[in-house]
Length: 135
Image (cartoon, rainbow, N blue to C red; front, side, top):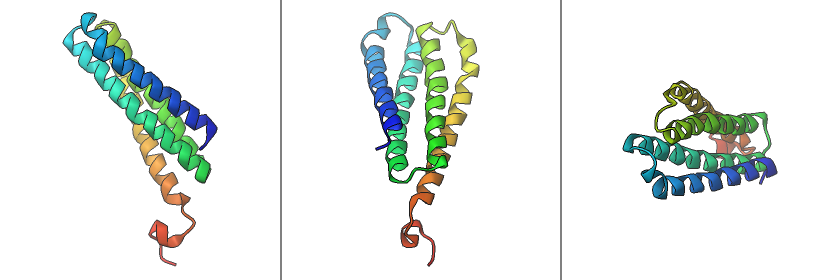
């Protein structure tokens, strides 16, 4: 497993679990239901993309490529922008609504990460029969 992406995915995953637990147990008393829903969305996407970064770590180890690095950075930046802006809005009980403009930018990075991961995975096979190419 690629060390950088493996560590990043692990740390992001741990933070996602901690955030989810905080949202489920501590946040209900602090913010309203709309902010709580937003926080839960942030934690869910945070976890999904922690796992995606771990997939990048595995792929980058098996077949290092520029495309897998791009995928990792897109997931990292996307998670920080998307989940980070949602966490901030939720924790401020929606007082920082202006951060809603940042959220879609993070989403675009996440989408770009998935596309890059798909391309990296498609390019990773050296065996033409595994990649669907004819010999």
